[in-house]
Length: 392
Image 1 (cartoon, rainbow, N blue to C red):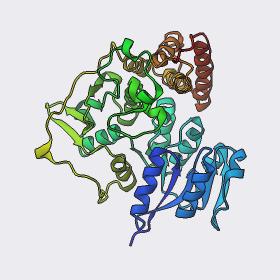
Image 2 (image 1 turned 90 degrees about the vertical axis):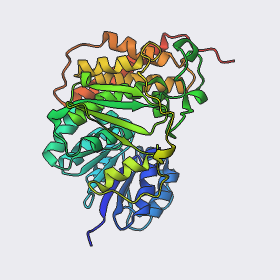
Image 3 (image 1 turned 60 degrees about the vertical axis):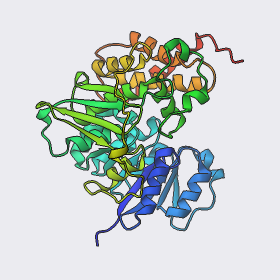
């Protein structure tokens, strides 16, 4: 019997991390947890540690230690970026599930890839910001990058066994989010609960807001350029509210290959962990004879300008994607805190990108991180000049 694969889960207390641990628990003969990394949620991390008994648990800050319950025998706690690096590169770890938000995971994941660990990539910001460095590390290490985003997992599955030179274009699908039928003016005073009310997926607050603005698709276009080696003008987006067709690949003979499935993150997570095998997932099945009313439509770029901003950053390359990602994170946080309107999120990104230095090519990872920090400061200045929204 083959030994169970060792998995380090970065971002174990987030939505993707919890789903991944559910898959791991379902298949104990195939997977075992070697490390768990959380932000500051020490209480949930303690529960996970007692359930999965990893050798290492990691918190983003040592100040959260007081909230961490007694750990199981044999489990030790580490902190911060260096602790995450130790967790990701730990002995016995075969796969690193990269689902931790923020820049802290960039160096640990790149180092794990360089050491030959398979990267199951759920944090799209890693490729958006540091695609050049992560792809190169994975090439050197040989472990590969398996996408966990449902759209990129779908593309990965649709190109398996086909020649790259036969691909005409990639089509990423999007649900359209909760505001698909609203105008830009109607979205201006959208509330946080409305923005978080995704019609088909249950996700964390940040990605839910990104889905509502369609910024998530702009970032996914950038991600796809690194994963599949195609320029942004060969990556299209279609709105598909049913979220059944997760993406499509068109070939030069006119064939179109799509991946379909119920909207459940456990499917792409399970595939990334078990590839090239497929797990017998006990999930609802699609019933083709009952599938009707599917909608595919081009995105409304006038009312959802975030997509155009994403394409602009993808075409510019260099540090532009990192800058856009940083500005968007700052703006989403400000919206969630009630400091700006929903439509101001995109205004922040557009304003920053219009003044961002063109042709700025990162030579080192530190160049990217400096661009990230600089863009965050500039986004904060842009927000400080905006009028605070009135809430009745």
